[in-house]
Length: 237
Image 1 (cartoon, rainbow, N blue to C red):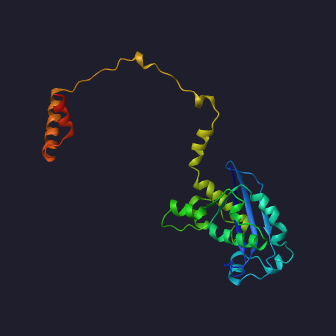
Image 2 (image 1 turned 45 degrees about the vertical axis):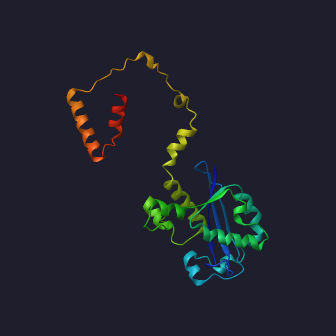
Image 3 (image 1 turned 180 degrees about the horizontal axis):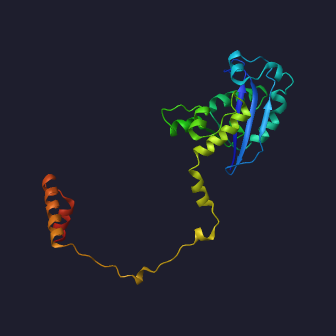
């Protein structure tokens, strides 16, 4: 199973109003193991970042001036994510921006290229209802070291998200190992011939039968004579 953890940074909050992607970070997980085959771009958005966005990611317009435009990296990006399950924290935000970037280049929507999208924010809300479920909050709760995250960065956040996801789904490890194990011992079943065993038949004592009859009588009284067990006993008799 190939999974890609993805995060973006943008010039603002609204792709529909002209904001653009300025950074894409992707981290690859293959069979629940980090491969190091990551993908990272800084992009020239051809417009300035809003001041509020700049305070979040700290990526200046000057820094982005000589970076490639999305059109220059789109083929490499699509080839990298093709066929993978993509895991994003608050997926509608990132997917909305990527869809807009792809649309501007005449490409199909993002979901057309991937096997599926998993939103870890939705997962977290189900696992930790009523609690804060930002990426920082999840790092604290799941003991993922995010001490290097003074500003948002797409690659760093994708790496943190991978660690968070692995911790959130850690209970699956034992199940996956058990199902996929090739150990001969785990697939060997010892056959036992039960015909060699004589199982004793232990009859109820007289006191136990009396207590049983008392319970049935109480049930029969409370149900208006509709006790199924008592009716069966009478029909057999």
